[in-house]
Amino acid sequence: MPLLQIDDGGFTLDGEPFRLLSGGLHYFRVHPDQWRDRLRKARLMGLNTVETYVPWNLHQPRPDEFRTDGGLDIAAFLDLAAAEGLHVLLRPGPYICAEWEGGGLPSWLLAEEDMRLRTRDPRFLAAVDTYFDQLLTPLLPYLATRGGPVIAVQVENEYGAYGDDTAYLEHLADSLRRYGVDVPLFTSDQPVDLARGRLPGVLATANFGSRSAQSLAELRTQQPKGPLMCTEFWIGWFDRWGSRHMVRDAGHAAQELDELLAAGASVNFYMFHGGTNFGFTNGANDKHTYRPTVTSYDYDAPLDEAGDPTEKYTAFRDVIAKYAPVPAGPVPARGPRLAPTTVPLTESAGLLTCADVLGTAVDAPRPLTMEQLGQDFGFVLYETTLASEGPALLEVEQVRDRAQAFVDGVPAGVLERESHEHALTVTAPRAGSVLGVLVENQGRVNYGPGIHDRKGLLGRVLVDGEEPTAWTSRPLPLTDLTALPFSADAAALSGPTFHRGSFEVDEPADTFLHLDGWTKGSVWINGFALGRFWSRGPQRSLYVPAPVLRTGANEIVVLELHACHRARTVELRESADLGPTDE
Image (cartoon, rainbow, N blue to C red; front, side, top):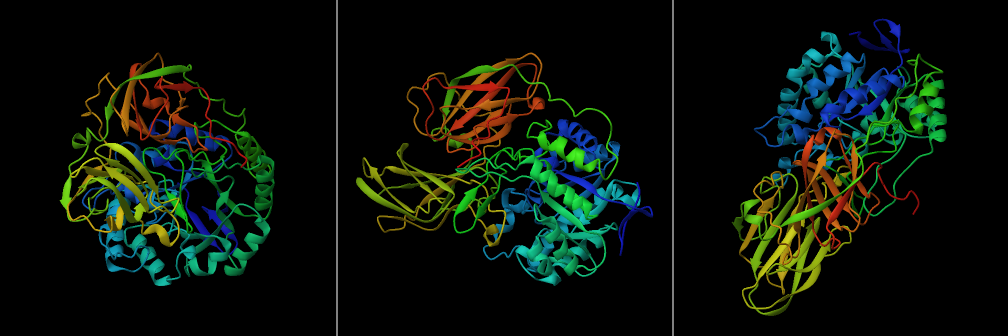
């Protein structure tokens, strides 16, 4: 592959002037069987490069485990990009933000109470170096200097919005070089943070979505020579639960792109194709109030969540054609859809009554955090005994993030971090009743100082002013539901419940699961975790990738944390519903 070089005049590729026309495409947000399709559509829009983050937390879920299988086979993704004739910008972190759980930082870092993330804390740097070694060593053949598609690698990510320790960035850059990265390095920051986040001797780039001329001028002020590049050209935005679906006018975004390219700058669309926060992988923001991100990462991008071209695809292709060759031919057509069908969920299993097959309880004098339990995602069930009959005040210093209380299995109330709730009254029918608190990790904070986001019940937990001294903490990651004893007799079940049904498929195709009448929970199809749903919206459907389905019988499991309509049915439809676009 050609080599990217940086000089005072801009980028060159094997000595010829070069403009990066790139788009964000995160392999870990797309089913691997669909990577080839998305990459082909990137090339057909006129892109010559794709960009991807690398999620440290998925690749290294435990300190002694490193994964590159299935949807984490980054080498396979790079092979497909190269086969499509695309260059790659690699953004390995260690921190990636990306509205991703914890900004990509593994939860086990937080098992140490005083760990300082994104600093020169020796424990953090040692963990980063191990991660770089395990990630980069197998990927060295994919660097352009060795004939591969990776033409540049990012150092950290928007560090100027977090800190100003240049020595920390220098350590990361030195580590990348030490582990064999010999292609150009770059940093990316919002214009106001460039001075804090740039690293001398490394190309600085800017992130913005409007006022291109003003933003590029600020970049030129900080970096008088060299290429101008927008590494995150924000053409849409992400959604959070309880808000509206964020969209951006295609014509306005195309006009901003035209201004950017007319200035001679290179660009990376954030995002070209957003994809999905499958399972429990969404992140959250906390600017004085905790706000978790929804399952869909559609991002109002040129390719929608199902990989179909949107109005932006055509508008951007037309602008790109003014500055670079664009492949001839029509815009790719929408992919096939599964025929609409209604699926009855005829079997059920109560979460509380079946908790022992989902996780092993740990005894302790106080509730343990997820990190202390060695748990990344999902729920923790805390239990203790109430000493006396009658009403009692439950007080929790910090709820991370949503706690459902039960007395002898009967729902007693909810405490939400998002609503700044800390106390509720429960009533014990007898002395010795069991107080249960089911806590959901709704997504670790991915931006700002709140990234030190431990999950569970934190701080003091009081019952009528006293701290119970005998607790069990049961991790419920919900990674394997095969042991659940489903039954057709669900009349007596109350509280969080798994519901199961099946449907037939003649030929797998994309579809969207709609849960009208359901309240809150998660969904699995054939064991694949689709993500979370919540009647709070805005998202009202879940994307089901065709490769998740199989010809013949397919299983669907819905975990409803509260209550659903009496019919207990879900629907597969041809179109998504991401919610209203106005408040």
